Image 1: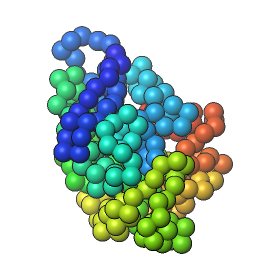
Image 2 (image 1 turned 90 degrees about the horizontal axis):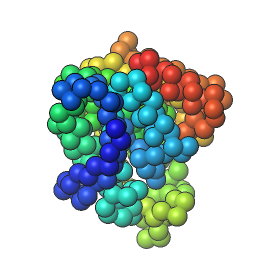
Image 3 (image 1 turned 60 degrees about the vertical axis):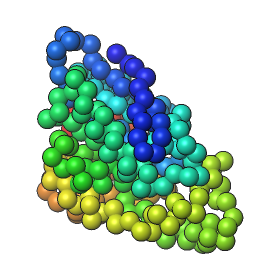
Length: 250
């Protein structure tokens, strides 16, 4: 079953899709909460989140994927979103998913791509007992570090009062200020469960060293896989196949 769902929180209306395997009405399924990346949506490039949701469903695993507030079909506008608003959304999405009668709350996993990985790690750390496992696809890590890497091109332009155009989406000044105020990895490090980290060696958006840092944070509880030649969103048939296979096995 694939079903459109809505969730209302303090930010506004969040819109998404839930995937539940076919089976007896009283059966409870393990599940995965998926978080998309910066300027992304609940489908992501190559429909990768849709495809992985359907693969999970074929293997008896439920999933849910929402557009964050200000992205995709959810309420709000992108220029008003912040990392903090996404963290709020993420916690509410996790709570929503765990409240569904079809879900085995002892087997709920979180998955995040890029900045969605940043959000996923933080959410797992803050809700440790609610998360069975954590999957990070090319996680962005500490966003203020990504900002510092592009200080000239991003931060100074925004603080001059000029809108920053990210592929037609305008990034607001409050996003920059918010990112600088947060210590994401301190919260992420509180997560005590098992972690899978996957990163492409040719990622030009987030350095693969970021995933190495996550691996150091989690220690023996983490498995780190590098996919040779893969870009930031694993857009190649072999790359995506390896990504899905490793994640499903986890």
